[in-house]
Image (cartoon, rainbow, N blue to C red; front, side, top):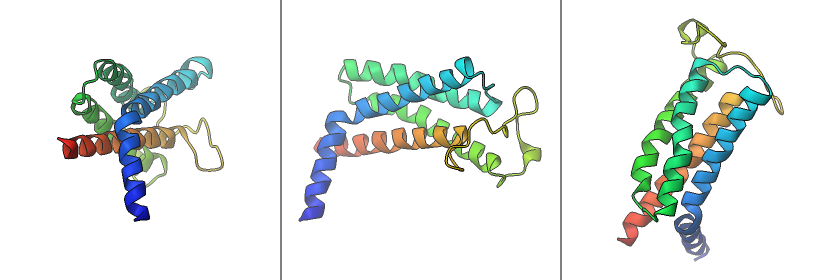
Amino acid sequence: MLISTYSKMIKNLVLKYGLYIAWFQALISMIGSLVFSEFMKFAPCLLCWYQRIAMYPLVLILAIGISRKDKNVVWYALPFSLIGTVIAVYHNLMYYKIIPQEIAPCEIGASCFTKYIDWFGFITIPLLALIAFIIIDVILYLYLTYTKKDE
């Protein structure tokens, strides 16, 4: 009974606020990446640029979808988020030396291995990007799942 109550509560929250949360996460990620590069002067590596290419449009896509009350916005936003997630996973695997540095695409410009931040001994810029994409993925997936069940 308790699980059913929580499930209904999560469903209602996702249906009512999910797109706003996903949009806010994308907005914070965009602002954060701009603060790191423009104000703190951390040079983004090639993989960071690719992740930006996946994240920045989400701010606009989700904002338009929310303003038009378009439940299909998930179909436009989720591909960007999933592509960003794949790039972020690859970046983290390289960053934490699970994938060897020799196959890194960052040969020109900023290195994919430069540690600009290291909060609490494990929170890095690539990890922040991965977490942001996963949050957006999960929310959009749940929103898509719950809207399909209501149809």
